[in-house]
Image (cartoon, one colour):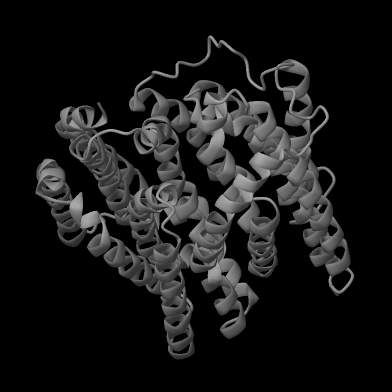
Length: 485
């Protein structure tokens, strides 16, 4: 019995990184297109206060789900290849599904109990729907995540794109036909997840992980042992990434939290999503590299190529998003949300450093370097909290974005001197000199046009950005191809 089809006309596990990236980029385009439509509609429909409540509930449940649900994804990433080699895929997935069902029961029970203490009806709805949102999300994720690992990017992207379109359609129906509130952000995804789950189990009968879920003792032990590291690191990192929302709420108010979170979401929608796609595309190659017993020189060369490819792609992406942050916010938002575009650039470059850190984080998990990761992440978290507390008392809430960037740079510095300096050397960075010079010239041109000609047009910004992006792509295409092979 297999949980996935033996053969597929959709996928090719030997496909290049570029092909995988293209397929994953398709689902991102769908997500961005929906968000471009959704964001101005719902920032006009719902208030900053409502967005503040929604964002705090979302972040809180994400933290809870780390302890109860998120072990499943990290365990599959870690043990899928091993289980496949040992012909024990069914045992791995059956164990994980069993643990999700048990954890889901506790999460739903806890949410119902906590909701009884909420005074506002909207908060009660958000708490209850939030639990079902995370459980259904994790179940869908467990079914399709192996497609990423196996390199079946086409199938994965098509399924996720369909899911996004269904949830958006349901969201419009709930808010404009049934006149539901901001809790529809949760309930629309819950309903779409249920539809996708039913469709997958009917359409692909080879997915049989829901039949008689049971816990295998050997995989259970490995999952728990590995999850000790993954859980603590993921938990600390998520707090590190989102603690500013809680601190802003405490020192400034719920409306400021809503404003900040919506701007932050633009970075998640754009640069963070593309970084996620990049790691999805390189996963088969990167995991096989970490699992293989190649020589140190071969590993170093391949690792440097992946780092160089990452930088040659994301340096221009971060630069362009920062240059046109005001235009992006003007398109996506309404009302006072538009006034905080200056928050976007530091958040965008924070995500650039996040991606670099991911290379080390994945590598250290394979090497089981727990103590190092605990010390580095917890130290950065403490620094982030203390600096936020000091500066939020002295200035406006926008400073939290800069604090996040400083914290990421500090964490990157730690990993650089410990490990990355061995790879981010002259051999890795020399192919980036021409791309960096191109970006510097483009920045000078952009600032000169703004200063001397005072052009303030979204259409002009679009044309200029398109010219910059195309010229950069044409002049760096050969380098990118060389690094991806």
